Length: 322
Ligand SMILES: O=C(O)CCC(=O)C(=O)O
Image (cartoon, rainbow, N blue to C red):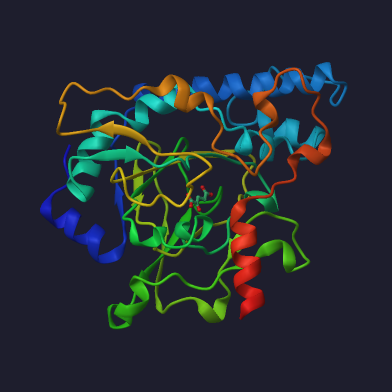
């Protein structure tokens, strides 16, 4: 289902686009099964280490991690930072359905960007509410010049109750802010919230309409790497699961140099080409962050849910210079 000329125009104009009904339940189920498995492994490790006294096995995809989070604060963060890519994620990321769309945006040479995320937005968890940011702010300076489309894919219906995405449709009269990296602050220096997120201060937010993207499961939100966006709080009693995946042209600066390289997904030079996931996927993209889940023999402790990343030094330095 390629983008129509109008959709493509809207995406380039606004920096985002919602595509309804792209995936069927059947296509998303392998992702859900892979997540259930990750959550089960985490529960078993916490249980074996004496950190929790119940496995909550009777709870399913929509609630089990929330119960674990209550018993072991930080469980949701560990699922977010556990960086080994499940096969089902690799398959959807390099699926013809998504690559066909990405090809319309960046051309036939396509690499997967090393940053992908599984978001376990558990209810009433401030660490699952992502403040206003541009994705490029989390990467090395200069990579904002590389066009990096993202697909944000909810695995449940996402709305204002359980927390959905909001984006700023930039005011066309503010053209110059479109291509600009906005100043970001570290949320953990605000004192109120010990998180790893960056945020854009209200005064630095560009003018434009705030668009709330309530979306059905099966839809995707396409973003570019400069569009300011955030996700709202989860006031419901279920987990708002989503994944976000990125692409770019191979050979261009990805902003994760020395940490993890992009993976080639499609090339016009070889129509039969298939990405070699084995080595790439086994290596965590979370260098600088602890990937505790990658080492099954290591007992998990509450401090493992503390997150640090290279973007912190970037903005700490930048803000001191200011
Ligand atoms: O899924 C969310 O809650 C936030 C996602 C996000 O901000 C991103 O993908 O950059």
